[in-house]
Length: 99
Image 1 (cartoon, one colour):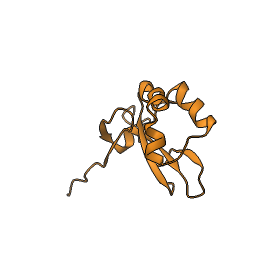
Image 2 (cartoon, rainbow, N blue to C red):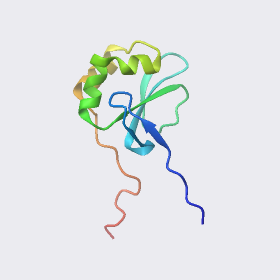
Image 3 (cartoon, one colour):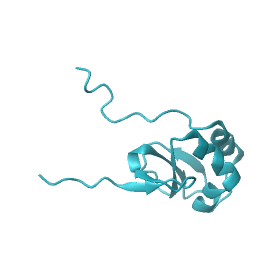
C-alpha cells in the first residue's frame, strides 16, 4: 500500500509550514471578491492562515494577506480578521473513535 504525502502550506502571518487541513484558506475569486474558503477548492488566488488568533489579528497590521492576495481587503474581512479565528476547524471523521 502506498503512503500518501500530506500537502503542506505556509501561514502568511507567522510563516509556519503546516498540513493543509490545519490552515484556513482565504481566496480572491476571479471576480475580485475576497472570501473564506472552507473547502479549500474555490477558484482564485488563495492564501492560508493558521488557527492561531494572533495570526488572524496580525494580518491587519502586517498587511501580509493584502500582499498574498494582491488586493486590498474589504472592511468586512478586516473586521473578521481583527476578531480572530471564527471557529476551530473540525477534524475529518468527527465522532470516530468514540464507538
